Each structure stands twice: as C-alpha cells, then as structure tokens.
Image 1 (tube, helix red, strand yellow):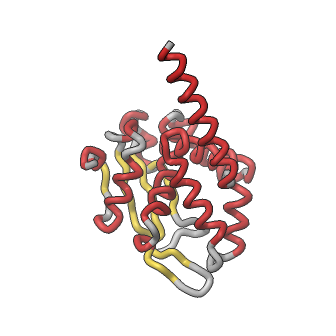
Image 2 (cartoon, rainbow, N blue to C red):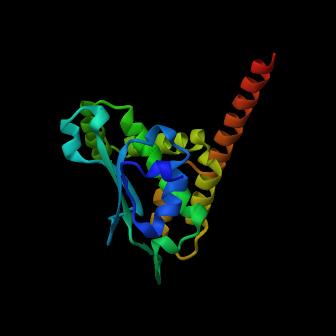
Length: 196
C-alpha cells in the first residue's frame, strides 16, 4: 500500500488506516493530500477541504487537507482519535476521501460556489454528505461506512446533539446497506452480461 503515500503527508500514528482507506480510491493515488491533526474541530471529527491557494492553479494541481481532531470527545471522557477501532477510522477517512472525489469533479469556480452554498444551506450540506457517502460506498467502503455510522449513532457517550446532526445530515446505516445491495446487484448483472 506504500504506492498510496505519494503526494501525501500522513501522521505515522494513523498511516496504516489512511493507506487502507486510500487503497479504495486509486484515482487519488497522485492527488496531494495532507492529513493534519487539529486540537479541536468545531462540530466535526474530520473535515476535508481544498487548500485555498490551490484554487488559484489548475484543477490538476489542486491540493487538499483532511483535518482530523486529535481527540475524540465523549460526554465525560476524551480518547485520542488514533485509539478508535481500525474499521471506524478507515470508514471516517473513507468518507472524507469521498468529499475529495466530489471536489475533484468540480471546477475552481464550482468549488467556490460549493463553499458558499455549504455555509448557507443545510439542505446543500445534506446533499454533499450523501455524495461523499455514495462515493465511499461505490468504491467498496460500504462495510466501513456502516460500522462508522453505527459507532456514532449507538455510542452512549457521544453528545446527543452530535448524533442528531449525523442522523439529520448523513445517510443512515440502513440507507448505506441498501446502496451496497444495489451496487452488488449491478456488479452481478454486469458480470452476467459479460459472460454471455
């Protein structure tokens, strides 16, 4: 999986999980992405974004950052993020890489409009979160995304406001299971047609 390290800055403590998530996205193999620990991210655990300065260059020369909260804050305790189970970390990172796939499909002007709409419209936020999950599922990360969603929604120590936000803005585990099922059915149909 070392081939996925190219043009990436990854903290050693999460490298294994980042490389695993990246391995589902061969299209991002050469994409510049920095994975950066932050002391605190307001309202998020992870956050993918294009580097503003790279919006002044060609789309092919864009750079991205995935900010990662160094600590996973629960109601009464704090856990270093790297101590979360591997499948949860891979799912979370895989979702953020889904955002980068979405960003890659947009022009620089389209990304500026994206940022504007993201700030102004809750419906738009939900729309782009569904796009990120859909990218992750279509790239084979369905089981990881489901595990991450269940971890969040079923975790007794997570603040209810955060759970409510996740339930409101993101696909539910059942929706993701349905997406995985449809993807598998489509692949089976394609294989059957190819065998004819």
